[in-house]
Length: 158
Image (cartoon, rainbow, N blue to C red; front, side, top):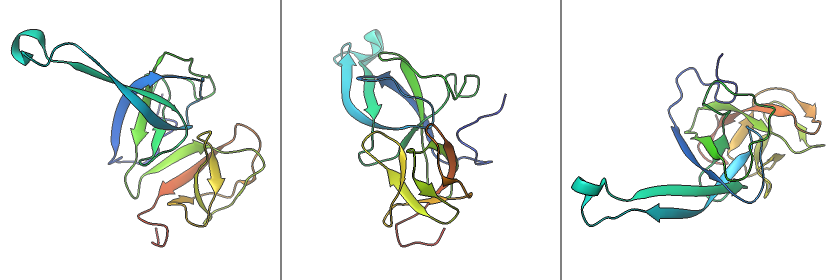
């Protein structure tokens, strides 16, 4: 099975994982880090392995774009919701990376439209967004996935 969210032939961003908190999400939803849990001991990293840090994430956007990927990075379904308190994989794209994002229902997203994510982690049109829609999606239905490219800045040509 191929990757269904990150579609760049040579993705340059980072794949990471965290623990999903507060509400379930589907792959293609943007996430934000809400806190970091630290367990273990920093005092002797050679004997204890050091502390373990786990990021807690939820739907939304704050700073970097974190886009939820399917479970197992490539093996899971993009249609199944990931439950609260489960391990979630996400991708942090770099400029030029292409990926599919879950869009807000009734948004008009055609090729060339700039976009960003709303508080629910869903793609919405935005004149100042750093994402550029790569396909004509028209008025999107609920749960629709739209192909976008990560831009450099809101005024840059991608």
